[in-house]
Length: 485
Ligand code: 9MR
Image (cartoon, rainbow, N blue to C red; front, side):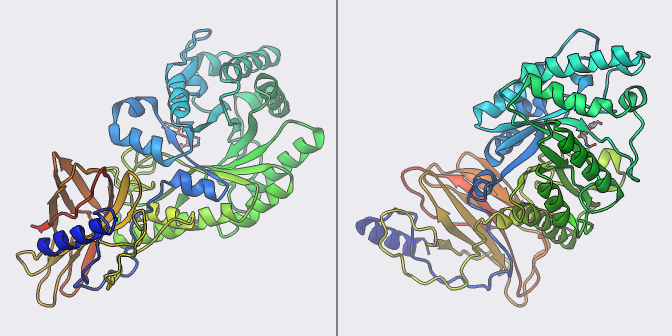
């Protein structure tokens, strides 16, 4: 097999093709239906071709402390929202003493990665410092404190924030106003005032009101709708509505798109600001597939409405998510699993954004067409046999200047099966793995080892499982020999 590839490589090299673009031999096994390779293109680039941004919530400590987290945050997303760093309790825990360190760090990270920032949040009933909540301030003093807070924080980041969640979670489920420090003392007047103060401090920032359980039509979203309508009528600087979208598996509201549309029709932008889709743990293949479908529904609803400007996920990976600590027995709500491997939901989002879902060709023809650059459809395959009679097939599905996407398919013939699998290979020309999905992969020196994800370890007789990866290459990209252990 190695032999064959060497011959192909030499021939293609003579023909002026990059060595990685090899004519393929037929894959012995059928391809798993729906076993999509990951998008070759980061979500942020896919989203931008659709005219929206895609973001995520981040914590400063993880951006500097967790390499995989930072890599995903910096490469996959075009917008970041500080998960907690800009909340009042974070920036002014003691009256008059400000701590901007984490917020500054996130803004700097975003600028370094050519990302926009959603500021979150200036006025909220929660996560306020105790000096504020216990201060028993009268209306005039409290209004002054609020004005100063907005001027100080929005002023500090003036020109650096794409959109501010000025006001967060104003309503109860029945559409009445939530009792809070602000409402109790100031009535509803603080709402228009806060918008005006934010506008004064940062005239270019888009000013949003953000809430949860307002994603579909209903009493709470009616209340928000009526508020936005009346703010527009008063000429208040309201630019957008944030739909948090903390969903439960299988329960994305069927009226999501209609609801986005009606806000857009009021003349405001709409953003999905805190998307996650939680499930009862442990996850299963079926739940993860459903989760992919649910994420797809959300992306499609946003894409269908011109004024839906972007989608922000709430937390990078399942290891970072706020969900398990608040909803006991629930989790697995994000696009990446606890090892920072992309989940089926990641693939679903990529696909909904127009990304490639090419599956390994069942019988790739030996036609490496004479193209000056590596052809994205060319496939190089290596198919060694495992001890059990099962095989692992490595293929390059897409290649560009500095990177490529590959897939490995583990297949078992009739009469052989696997309860779990582990695949390994040596990269022969300095290739470096950057990402993998549907398996846990590590690279040590030249050697790559990938073990099955929790949901695809069992390969039945006559069946297959596959996973994908991205890697960097330079110079040449020879196909390695894969071992299945
Ligand atoms: O994810 C945030 C979590 O780390 C904080 O402990 C929590 C504090 O209230 O806030 C979480 O983020 C919330 C966001 O700011 C507003 N909408 C709901 C989010 C999830 O609780």
